[in-house]
Length: 470
RNA sequence: GGUGGGGUGGCCGAGCGGUUGAAGGCGCCGGUCUUGAAAACCGGUAAGGGGUUCGCCUCUUCAUGGGUUCGAAUCCCAUCCCCACCGCCA
Image (tube, rainbow, N blue to C red):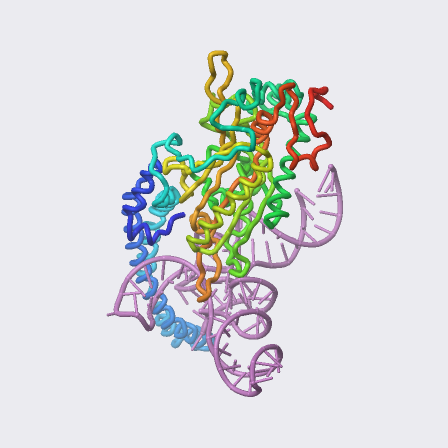
């Protein structure tokens, strides 16, 4: 959520921000509603103040009279009752007026609130303007020794690469058919060494972030209440991307949603809390199953492990003090952890500065990391893919946007409560990471070399075409 | 699923129709004492919204939403959540 005061002071900044992000939200209607709401509220409060004043004045009188009433004779009784009726009638016009104002406010509030939740965080000034993901800016690339990104895979390695689809088939690493049989399109099963490799790479990533970089290991719920989804900024905009469990329709409690990322649980855990500032920055990592409906992606990346409904992800989240320098530095730190990881995995990657149009509603700034995937991209004359970058990581910098929505604060030196800043980044998501891992480490004979960093986590050094079920 | 008990400030906890925004304690801040610290003692210490001549003023908030009442933390209804025991069960 954006800062309402800032919006009132400088609406143009938010109008421009939404426009840069290609997000449609009617800010001028919101401001009208906001003005009306404030006016009504002020009137109501004036009436309330008056009512409270009267109430304080007549309260003790009523109490006294009621006491007298008990041991009064008939004449006195009727006199006292008249006085009581007079006193009790005093606030009645105020009451009905307050009721009327309340009703008016209640009529405005839902629209007011819905619009406020839709106002996106404006992109930072140093984020490049753009119309689509095509305008993202490459910051730098890295590739392991002996792999020159200006040449094709074949030129580097001396043989034509197979795609990950071909590799998982020949090596028996994935069973797509049965995954689809049970759950439908975009489902899969990792089998044998496929599952071993995924477990290895996840565990390697989790150990790296928690042991080497000191992030606190956490488990999180992935079935969450709507408040968590709204609080983290995934709702209302991304509502159709989440699986919805309609528990309320079964007469029990409330609805639940499946999280698309561990971030929801890691951030939601501190909702409505005032954190101890000496605990900041809080650095946490979780390994969780992620669920995405991929609504609107029909027809895109339908084959293979790239775009699927269920996957595993190691996620890093940082909650820090509300200081731009601090959160910018932490953002860089989080990216460098991923660079360390990908370098150990010996996977070529590039850093992409996302342009304004690609940021989504919650981010002030986002940097994606893409790995080189030889099996992706346009096809050559032989109908073989030329290779392409594929997104594997996304590092978000959000200022206080999430913490505001989650009502997550800390106390600063002066004892004032301040909304914290939050950041998050992928550490590693699988099976998507298996695509570059398999494609880049394939050998001429079709086997897969296991990089050194994964060897402690694997029972084999090389993946060979053994029987799929082993 | 059944029965019972609960949800109060940063935390613990009292209050069960009227100066209760809320006793008491812990924590935190300031002071006295001390060479310094601790202890002890004294004082202060909620959040959010609106307005402001930036001194303050004002409204809301005791799980949430309704209701009763001149007046609700306190009574009634609904919902959510937590705990205990029993049943079932991975």
